[in-house]
Length: 405
Ligand code: CTP
Image 1 (cartoon, rainbow, N blue to C red):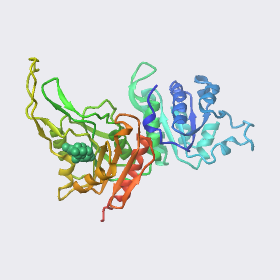
Image 2: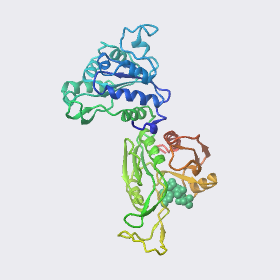
Image 3: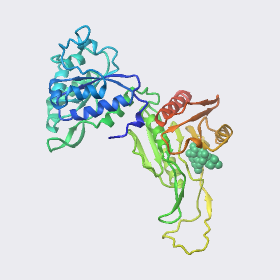
Image 4: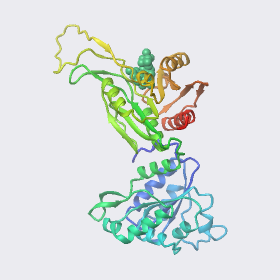
């Protein structure tokens, strides 16, 4: 089972009709139903007759907690018109899998089953996740239908290239449920950073002593990666310069590996041209060994002295540039958060800094932060890092000077 917690905030209160048509990828729709529900969505499944041959209505009923709809003649709906009633108050219709046949029917405005009728009668966005054999996908008829639907404003999620159920390899695979969830959350996120370039740092740095040893800081990278995800979802171009972490690269983010502080600084400076925002989340080691030994050191039994020299302060350096982008700092403190955090903000001349107390732990999934800016302090409630990240991005988008300003 994939981990959907990063997106936990994304779909709360959203009513989604999930259309399932008849392809082998319908089995992934079962997992998608569950994932959407976990992310807070109210999922109502509309299953085609062919879809039901692959996965039963009972499965979707159990996973969504809602009745499943298969027929336009279904009399369970109060007014006897499920194609109208089911579509009321819906935030989006998502069809996964969308077969070549369904795409053809939708492109031609047919209303020959409940799902097609729902799509025709909708007043909400329609997102299709195609799934079919690569030849069916590449067939000019399918491509014509896709182009026509795109021109009508229908959004396509995938397909991706890969191994297919028929044994062939090529385009036509349905996106995985995790990727579909991510695409949906991004779809619903207001594009407050559209047209903006964000350069960021995240994770710890590792300052090598010899080829196998080094000094580092405790940092999982989760907060930084959550901020990168939130920026990408908000429409920004994101360059993430990252220390060594075990977190997957967020969708739509360009990740550059930089283990040491010196390397991180160089990568930040070369990514900086054109940046509107710089967000420094990395726990950069303040010192590095004066020299890195090229071979593995052997123990001698005697005491060992390690000379450390200070690392450059990447954030302070970027913020001091005459062409500095909007700079956001982070500070994790063991005590006196307000004094230290606000002190760092002023010392580094930052318009915004996010502070938190170490009591919360460094590597957990939740965080309690306070945002500091020229207006004062703004405490946020304890929440999953994805949720905190979204609020940080909203705050920064409000403070960001407009292009004209
Ligand atoms: N930072 C940086 N480069 C460094 C040190 C810190 O870019 N060499 C950034 C961090 O990414 C963070 C902010 O500066 O956004 C504050 O980092 P922190 O280590 O808390 O602050 P310091 O100024 O190093 O203060 P101290 O370690 O003494 O608490």
